[in-house]
Amino acid sequence: MSKTEPPVIAIARTADADPALPLPEYASSGAAGADLRADLAGGSVDLAPGARALIPTGLTLAIPAGWEVQVRPRSGLALKHGVTVLNSPGTIDSDYRGPLGVILINLGEAPFRIAHGERIAQMIVAAAPQARLRLVDTLDQTARGTGGFGSTGTG
Ligand SMILES: O=c1ccn([C@H]2C[C@H](O)[C@@H](COP(=O)(O)OP(=O)(O)OP(=O)(O)O)O2)c(=O)[nH]1
Image 1 (cartoon, rainbow, N blue to C red):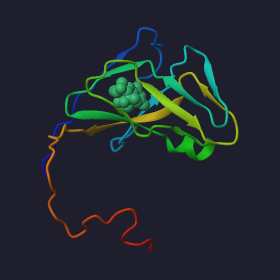
Image 2: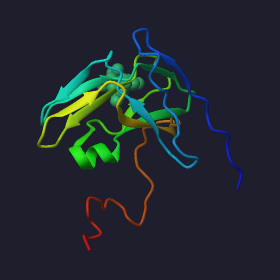
Image 3: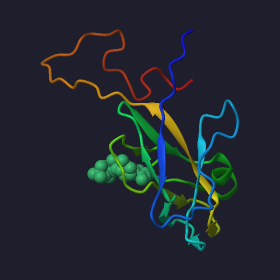
């Protein structure tokens, strides 16, 4: 099977970033995601139950055209604390050069403190081709037709 060369994602720190924070990296040879850390200028953010916040990572990315970065939750935070990425998966566009932020929400029962440098989410690089979008009068026929939303049953 031929393996396509993975894209290069350029990472730059924002002007106010903490240069001591580790950059995202793959923790194992098979890891799909690289962890993103909260860059809170040495401080912390308290998320009350039900509250959400945009958490800065101190990073900006340059993603090649045809690719995207998805911001996904960390399962440990979700299971242990009910803290997850509200807009999961967050979409980082290839032409975006602004700061990468993570929108976290606390769906747990207890307040959750996000510490500076804590790993709060993970970034996944995925192919995202821009399709050619065309308006037509009728669509081609398929066996499924218009069936959806549970049309095949629940069992
Ligand atoms: O979790 C996220 C989601 C988005 N972004 C940045 C990168 C992305 O390219 C840009 C716009 O995101 P999106 O298209 O999801 O937001 P929008 O609400 O549609 O805003 P816009 O009108 O700016 O596209 O915001 C983040 O930093 N974190």
